[in-house]
Image 1 (cartoon, rainbow, N blue to C red):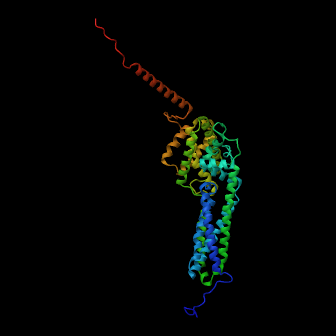
Image 2: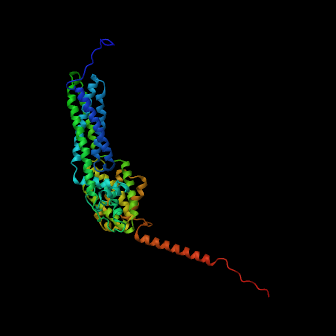
Image 3: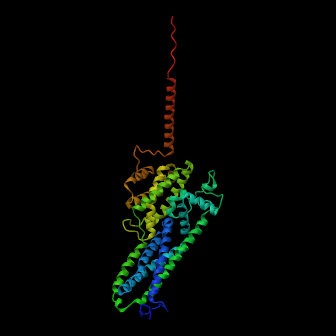
Amino acid sequence: MGKFGNLPQMPVCVGKPTTRDFLLFSGTCQAAFSLISLLVCSSYYAFSSDIFETQLEERIVSNVITIIASFAVFLPASESTNLMLILSASVIRIILFVDLTSSAAVILMDKMKIESIAVLSWTCKSDFLKISYMSSNNCCGLNKPYTDQLLYEDAAVCISALNDSLFCCGPDMDSDICVCQQSCFPHLINSVRQSVHLASGLGFFASFLKVTWELNNCFLHSPKMLSSVRMILLINSLLFVISSGFSLPEYNQASYMLTRQKQINELRRLLSHPHDKAHKLASQLFLYILEMFKGHHALISSVNLEEAPVNATIAEGLAFVIENTPLLLQLALIFPDAVHPYVDQQEPIMDILRWAIAVTQQSGFIPESEQSLFISAQHELNLIPRPADYWNPHTAQNQMARETHEAEILKRQAKKERRKLKKGPKLTPKRLDL
């Protein structure tokens, strides 16, 4: 007999683990890996949300739900806990489909999307990171032409700043594409592929843990709990409706204003170039957007704009037209001599422009401050009659007249300054006494 008397011997956990142990292990693992996957997707979201935003949003939402549902395994064992586990398994069963389709969509991305992510990742780098990347990989810029059709539509606003090859080719390079070194594009594509495979691997592993959860949880069903099957089916139906809405593309005023701010910043960078180069880049950017408008017009022109888009392709096309119509109109106002050769006396193009302006104004996203932009640009493009006092200071003729006028003003001011110097104080002749 011991010091404290006969104490009952504590049971020792030996042999096969119980169902509860499996649930605890799988729930903890899937919560941990879902958290890791969530962090990976969140960092991914910073530079690739414009490419496969739907898959990322589905992954982030499903991971958050999984983490919340997984904490049910830490509740005290009881009938209510078992019911909570069944409900959690029902939730995980639904988002398992979202996980698998999202991971498959990412891992099966085509060549164009991989290249588009590489382009966007490059544009999001700071100048210091670009220099470091080019130095470490012995490459120079993207070496991609501005009219490259492989560029994704959402990158159109950034194509005036894609190459950034001045750092390694020197300011004397007159070409838009640096050819003195190999391109950084293949290195970027390899980095994107590695990141995609890592994120997809975590996603598939989390899906496997969800399957383990579901299989283990089947042993907890009892006749008493099965009486609540109607409630479980109802919750399943509601969650299925909610999860199906994750894939619907969303667009709002904030998205429009964010894109417009990016466009304004890129226009400022475009204006910082010498006049001839800025003129050339503006022409290429205008033609690129115009070509994209032609493709979207064939797809969207027959759609009722008062109804919600029937699929993601139409929604993305509408977003592209709404976002880039103001940019195209700004190019027409700031670089009129670069734009007019492509639109004057071109009635099909004028019809495309009228259609794009009508779609954008009908969207309701245009703030009051940009209404004058639409009116002035339509005057400039002769889409509506010009008033008698219309004047665009950016045309070559008006710029020349303004420079001549400013030169005449400076010339008059210089003459006045010279006259003031001549009319200065003079010595009077000394008067002699007679």
